[in-house]
Image (cartoon, rainbow, N blue to C red; front, side, top):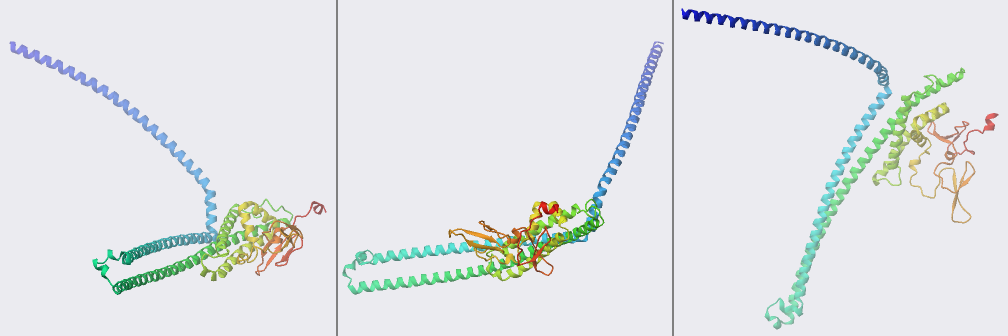
Length: 456
């Protein structure tokens, strides 16, 4: 009975504990279910927030893309217009080709410099060997001199046996004769070896000079071709741009003919990209012209053998420069006011470049070997009454000055020097339109009309 009662108590306690465990599990299940629902609600809210942010970001991205496309439309149109311009493409291709050629010439110059440095080092080694040979010769000569000193009668006993006192005069003379013959043979061998070394050194130096001369001539020819190509490319760009500006001048003239103002219309106003292209071309032309003229038209050409090529090179450079000058002259002749507007728009440096190209006297680069006493065309140099100073008289303005003139007398008086289509040169007055063929000179200075004349 007792065991049954104890078993019943154990069973009741087990049932009670089991009920409490079930209750605890149910409580935990409800708590975790509530937490899961709260987490699902928060996750749903986060998903909605992310979707809203993604939609806002997409809207902003679309708006930014539309604004960017709108801002780039004008630029793309301008780029397409430039790409459709055949002359611009040809000019760019020519410039790139010249740049590649310039880099190739730069590499060739570097290789030539390295070769010259190697030859210079070889020459220095040869000179060092010559100095060593000279030092050895001097040392041997010193040894021979010491032997001769020992062979003198006063010290003869130091190099011969004790029988020196018993030597006869014939024996002494015979010994000295043999010593002199030995010295003569040694001197002959030294002289022969020195002459052979000098002849070999002279031959090597001659070959080196010929090699350097050949490389210098080739480099100068390539330089001339490069500068001529740069000048021709710049000239083509100037001619194309001036052709466009001549269309602008024609449009201005048509508007003035019908009583409309010349400015204020797209076709009668020079475009910014045309002015920029003209400025770039003029500066490039001046740089190429100055470098080529300084090298090929200076008082001395770097290599004497290249003087034979100088006339042809200068003629080609003169033709390329005359092309630019004639183009600018046609623009100034067609519309002087437009020419002044363009000159003011391209900048002071480009305007100076144009003036330097236009106003240069014909064949001025070929007259580089003149003496310091000569004066430009249209001037006369006279001695002052004191017999010391010199003054200069202008045949154009009929006036004198103490300063030495550097320009043509007509150019200094305001006239402009142009080259016509037939190759001849003429002076042009930009104020009254008068012209005089070179080398004849005008007899008055080019100046704007006075206020009284304008009132009349």
